[in-house]
Image 1 (cartoon, rainbow, N blue to C red):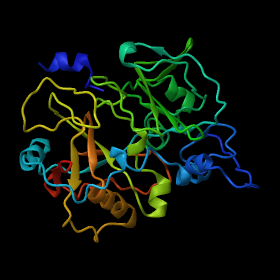
Image 2 (image 1 turned 90 degrees about the horizontal axis):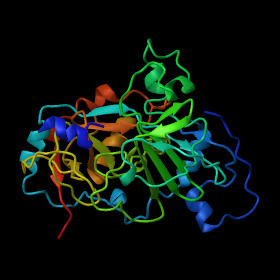
Image 3 (image 1 turned 30 degrees about the vertical axis):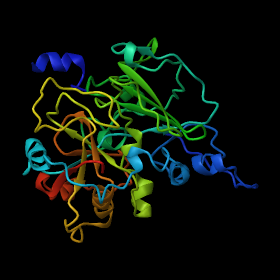
Length: 340
């Protein structure tokens, strides 16, 4: 997460069998889809798919859920796209996993090391099987790392470093807990930053506050998930990173991560849409789902990193999409803005 102040200075799984529901669910249970959840389950399971199918992630009018297919072009769209890279390819990162927890998950302290003043207070409902960014698919696909256990990854036994995002979702309460640079130690869990989001509300983080992403945004609502690909539809914006951003942010972002005031650079929270005339028929079914979402909901600039990189759950069940996505270039995108 090179978007933090230090970077600015440098630049200037267990399974659960869900019981049969014997009575009508309440509206809240229907939105959470979590009736019967009694222990933490990882995202890459059929049980998690079932819960996620019914989980309402933010209200329908939330920025993440807004259809932007008819939004007007930003007047500086061409220059902003060029600054990211017209010829650079779209990328798919199998990075952001998460764990679903029951409502009575034990809360524990997490030591916040770097951003206590811009972190939400604990204790936090962190389960033993909280995955670290990239687990498991990215590790199992690497011959040098495939022998690592989840505990090894949680403790960074291989000393890989990196952003080490960790995400915990309470579907019963519709609450989200996200951690940056999370690590298990002999003294317990620690993280550089911790953010809590209420998925029932449109409330943003305080103005000027970061989150586990540079933009002050949540990560979980943006992830390309297996259950969505199987249903054939993604109904939310995606998350995208860019190498160089501007010292500015726009709703729903709350934080910038750059010393650069060049107006041709994207702001944190910038909404970018796949051109409506882009032909998706030559792509596989799973990739078409992603591309259709980029036409309807677009993507939000959320962090500094690889240009044009989307976050895909590191789920072994998701077919490889990276090479197909690379056939989409920066020139196929346009920056849009909310109608006035």
